[in-house]
Length: 165
Image 1 (cartoon, rainbow, N blue to C red):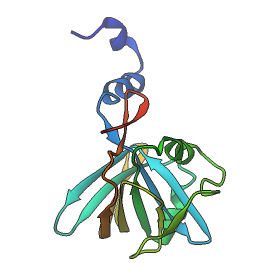
Image 2 (image 1 turned 45 degrees about the horizontal axis):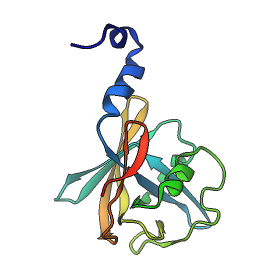
Image 3 (image 1 turned 120 degrees about the horizontal axis):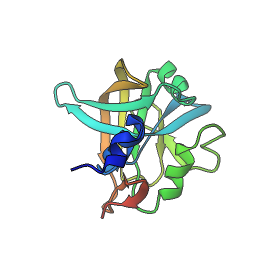
C-alpha cells in the first residue's frame, strides 16, 4: 500500500521517484557540426527493431544541445563505461563546451563524435522523430556499432550514477 504522502505529492515528482528505481544505461548522444560538436546524456535509450535495425532515444524538448544534432540528421550513441562518471556529469550539464579536453574521433558511418574509451557505440542516422509530451522520441537507424570494453556499463539508478559490473 502506498504511503499517503506519496499520493499527495505532484505526479511528476512521484513519477520521477518511482521510475528512478528502474536502472537506465548512461548514454551520450553526440553529433552536430564536426567543427562544433554537440552532445547530451539521454534519459532513455533502447533497441527497437532488428529489421531495419533501430534504436530509440528520448530527448528533452528544452535541450539546447539537441537542435544541432538534429540539424545534421545523425548521431553516435556512446555507451559510457566504468570510470566515466565525470564524463556523464559533463554531458548532463546544460551549456558550455562539453567537448573541451574530451578525446573523440569521427564515427565511421556518420562522422559523429565517438568518445574515447566508451563501453560501446552505435552510429545512427535519424530515422524519425515523434513528439512525446515534454520529450522527443527519436528513432535512429543503426549504420554501424561496436562493443569495445569488457568492463561494465554505467547505469543511473535512484539518482546515482554507478557501474553495472
